[in-house]
Image (cartoon, rainbow, N blue to C red):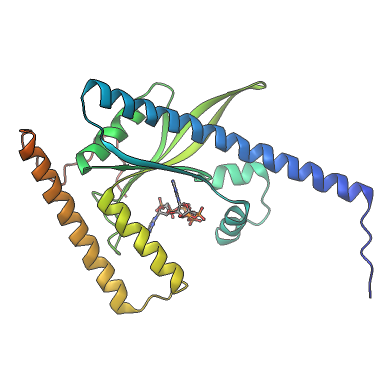
Length: 232
Ligand SMILES: Nc1nc2c(ncn2[C@@H]2O[C@H](COP(=O)(O)OP(=O)(O)OP(=O)(O)O)[C@@H](O)[C@H]2O)c(=O)[nH]1
Ligand SMILES: Nc1ncnc2c1ncn2[C@@H]1O[C@H](COP(=O)(O)OP(=O)(O)OP(=O)(O)O)[C@@H](O)[C@H]1O
C-alpha cells in the first residue's frame, strides 16, 4: 500500500485556498443580502403606501461549491481562477422574486433596476420571449455595491422575477428533468409545454379578475417589455 505524504506546506496552501474561497463566496452572500433588503423595502413600502403587496415570496440561494465546480466544467473553463470564475459565472448569488401578476413582475423589475446604485448587466425577458419548452421568467444580472472594511465592491446578483404560475411550472419542470436525468420522455416534454400555456392563460385570467374586482382598467396583456429590456 502506498502512503500519502502530505507536507506542512501543502496543508497550509490548502487552508489558504479554503479561506480565499470562503471570502469569495461571502462577497456574493453580502450582495445577495443587499438585493434582499432592496426587495424587502419595496414590498413594505408598497404594503403601507398602496395597501397592496405585489410580492408573493422571495427565495435566495448561494450557489454551492459543487454547483460552481460543475458549471466551471460545463462551461469548459480550463484554468479557473477567482477572477475567471467572477467574470464567467454571474449567478453565484441568486434572488427569485415571485409576484402575483405579470404587471407586478415588470413593475418590480423597473423599481429595482431604476435605483441609483443598481447597475443592470444583462436582461433576458423570457416572458415576452418564452423558451421553446415554455419556460417564462424575467431574468436580470445586476451589480450592487457592497461596502467592506477594505472598501466598496461591486457584486453581481442574478434576479429572477416570475408569477406564481410560472414558478409552479418551473419547479415541476425542474423536478421532472432531475428525475429523468435530463432524458425526459417526449410525451412529458409536450405535456410540459402545454402546461406552460395553461399557466400563462391562468395568469391572464387571474390578472383580469383582479383588475375587475379592484376597478383597475384592463391593460393589454403581454405588454411590450420596458425599453431598457434586452430581448433574447
Ligand atoms: N425550470 C427551469 N428553469 C430554467 C430554465 N431555463 C432557465 N432556468 C433558470 O434560470 C437560470 C438561468 O437561466 P438563463 O438566464 O437562461 O442562463 P443561461 O443561458 O442558462 O446561462 P448560464 O447561467 O450562464 O448557464 C437557470 O439556472 C435556472 O435556474 C428552464 O427551462 N426550466
Ligand atoms: N436566481 C435564483 N434565485 C433563487 N433560486 C435560484 C436561482 N437560480 C437557481 N435557483 C435555484 O437554486 C437551486 C440550485 O441551483 P443551482 O445553482 O444548483 O443550479 P442553477 O442555477 O439552477 O443552474 P445552473 O447551474 O445551470 O446555473 C435550484 O432549486 C434552482 O431553482
